[in-house]
Image (cartoon, rainbow over all chains, first blue to last red; front, top):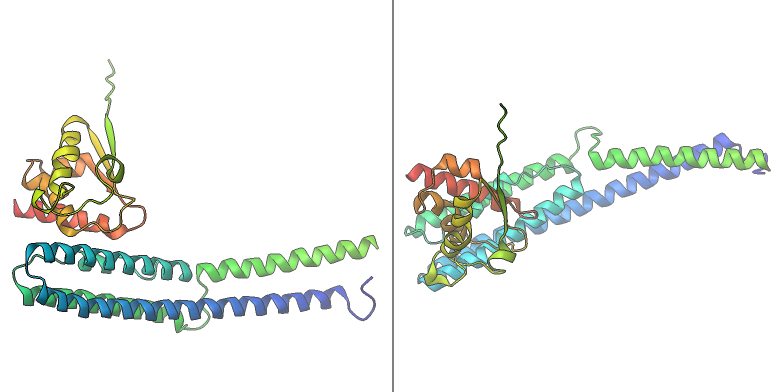
Length: 175
Length: 114
């Protein structure tokens, strides 16, 4: 049915080639997305750092500090959700949430303003460093490391090729 | 003769059983403060049941002071020991796991300060 011009093994090789291209494309898209999410996250943490220091100088009354704690908690939650997104894209928990605990444990009501801002700076720097190091280990591959998502993709490529090969073999036998 | 130990347990869903917007440390900060949660929900349940689980899912912006007063306050104010709290109390948040970490930290700090 396929004619003499193309044998089944040639067709199989073409399919493998197409699936491999699909795999590379998917991998590249994922890496770009991780990189984009990482940049946005780091930007967010750095903005929060500046905003918090500014607010701490302004809001010294109880109501103001209460509001600041509420907003700060919301910020940390947003950061955590974005970290979760990155972890999902990477297919493994590269960015550990432990780095966030210190940030969430910042006491807005601390009497010592300088110490408080220093603690926040310290927690933010540590978090940003952790994100950068973790994402770099994913983005700058040492050799051809295969992560969970890549492994799933490769398995699909080979299974897809096998299914296509058997389909055409059966069709070839029938007609 | 065999004895059978019957454990009673209670699950508190914070946003359903207390408030959808818990906020602040004590009554000065509002009626849905950490102190109010501890006194109205958590402490009575801890005294009545063998095991209490607090489900924090449904609200993502718990303040440090709310969690400190609600959970750390069990040791500081309500007279529970750290061992009792560790044995009887569990808590979870499905989306924001760092909240669980903060509660661990607040209970540890209250226990150390005692």
